[in-house]
Length: 85
Image (cartoon, rainbow, N blue to C red; front, side):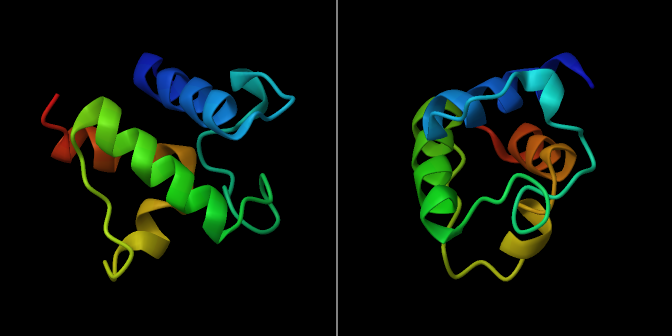
């Protein structure tokens, strides 16, 4: 896990009040469904915090959302590419 992936894992845990540690989130494991079991409300909460912290606005109608939110690694890479803060 890269340092930035660990930062995003920590952000996910804090935002959603999960009872796990960053090392419990494997970079390529799914965030939704079988993985962490996140849902659409969790995605909305994360999108808001990501926008506030990194300036990257994730839109609900973005066709790439499934790919972006597929794993910790894909989410971290998308934030790194698009962040303004």
